Length: 112
Image (cartoon, rainbow, N blue to C red):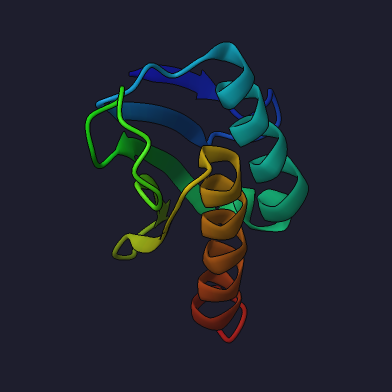
């Protein structure tokens, strides 16, 4: 589990959890970059973002679509919003889960 904050201007906290795999600094940097690039306009309304990464099969077996990224965004005063993606590449799973979360946040937060 890794915690890091968005920056000094927002109170959004990020947490990265992993199961069945090791989270590398490169993966954490990629998550941070994707969140800043695609979710920045929502950060002031979010108190926490949790990223859950997992290798659904044994880590030493490459069996295809087994890399999973689930992202939970917690808007202030609202229920958490979730997006996830599973595929054969962890970076692609992260990118797709972030893209899905953007659509969820647009739908739920921007209509208010």
